[in-house]
Image (cartoon, rainbow, N blue to C red; front, side, top):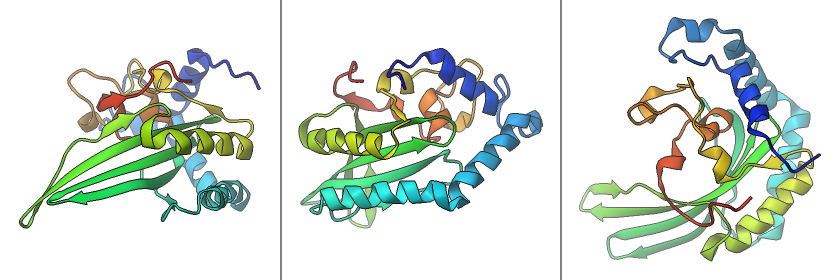
Length: 215
């Protein structure tokens, strides 16, 4: 399969499953055929043993290649449209501060795409209160993420040879008329490619670090 990804193909997939120009709170959103097709597609990926076995094999391969990683855990939220891994690669506690770095891998159900990125979390413990700052997004192999992001990308491409890596340049594109969850958008924003193909969280608005042209 060609490594060249044209935005038109991504846009076609999104318009197939999401009603553009209709907010999720509008009853017409649920009446759209693509909405029910999307629910069927998600259920198929979650409950089809053949599809799951390929994903489980990737998880076990990552664990074998990186035995030093304490956890390689699968995560899922109700409205996700992908398989997801969360991989903690670094954690430090200094006085009342907790600093964590976690690598994420998502494999879309809608199209043959996957993405990888890192999130740095800072949490402050103040007596009984915990203050969580907005994470910092790492979009390319660098610093502590370099080895893991590079190798896990290779392992994902080997495990799913027909899937292609979507870079941040694609993930951040807002799709005209798409509003999956308005409460996760700012002002007049539309939902972006990442939110449509992977998870609703609006990570592309985070402060970012890394090479914008990594692909």
